[in-house]
Amino acid sequence: MSVPDTTAPAAGAAMPDALHPRHLIVRVLEVLAVIAVVVVAISALPGLDDVKHRLQGADPAWVSAVVIAELGSCAGYLLVFRATFCSQMSWALSYDIAMAELAANSLLPAGGAGGLALGVWALRQAGMPTRHIAHRTVAFFVVTSAANFFALIVVGVGVFIGIIAGRGSAVLSLVPAVVTAAGVMLVCLSPRLLRTLGERGAGGDHQAAGRLRLGVRAGLKVAADGVDEAISLLRSHSTGVVIGSFAYMACDIAALGAAFAAVGQVPPVGTLVLGYLIGQLGNLIPVPGGIGGTEGALIGVFAIYGVSVPDATAAVLLYRLFQLLIPALLGAPAFVLLRRKLSRADQPAQVCAPLAVDVVQLPSPSGP
Image 1 (cartoon, rainbow, N blue to C red):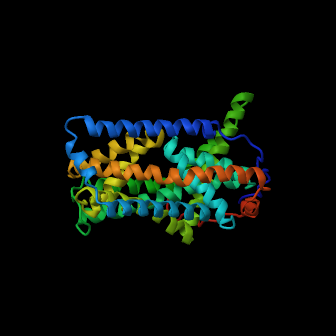
Image 2: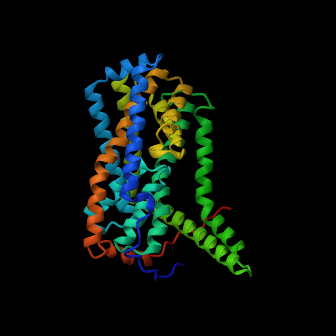
Image 3: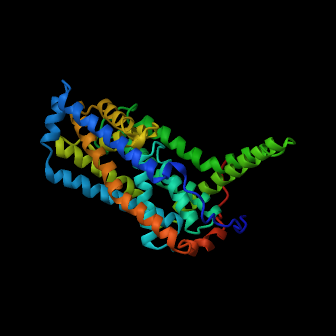
């Protein structure tokens, strides 16, 4: 059972230093510098002629499709953000925070955590209760990852048994699906495991050690409650959560597929989806926007799946250009408007305060 959240929102809290405009400007310059280096390398280095010719001959219609698909992905992110945190929050405020988060994800070397940090700050400034933000931030991370997990399991098994086009090798299809399924089971069991770890960490006589244990226990409880809330949202078939998380992933995959069509041949759907989902792990490398790590991982994974390296390189570079550019173009003005709105408005997200006292009741697991 949960108790009402009596933690007051931290109105006036300082913006995280990494989100300060001067630091974001530096990140923009870093990203532009990397893009410039890539362009020069493709133009000047020997051995990249095939990639250069594919990019120079890119079909404008399919390039437009990349842009439209990325806009659809951003719309999915907005939908799942609002449905997860507070469906009573205004669409304008939801848009500003969600797009600013996406822009931060494109600029900060934090594997997506930069956007979440910005969202936490903005929601606190807007008056949303702290406990609700903490729980729903964890839930948001879980529900946006759930679509990827589900797709990898379904497509991996489908490719292995031959009902989805792709390389049917067990190592390249069934193994990723099984590993992902095991990860999903671990996530479902994690609330109980996290609470057990928190209880074992109780006690301690030394004052500093006691404070550390209390902090760890609180963090474990927040994580457990957040996963519970994510599972509850998914089990309730929340339209915004389900459709939004699926659109956020599916439109991004469609953008990559359109990029392949623009420069060459589109791989089989199973190869496209599995290559995308596994290759996106490169975004965890701590560089701004995952630049370098994501591209290298995607190209490497597609090469393993039998896609031509020049095709994969050209398509991934085209896709990543718009995957970074579209959120930045939408998020930069949204971030400016958000800061102005939060400095003038009287806690516009306070309408969501009653949500903080909602009790998430999940059926007790019947199995171990």
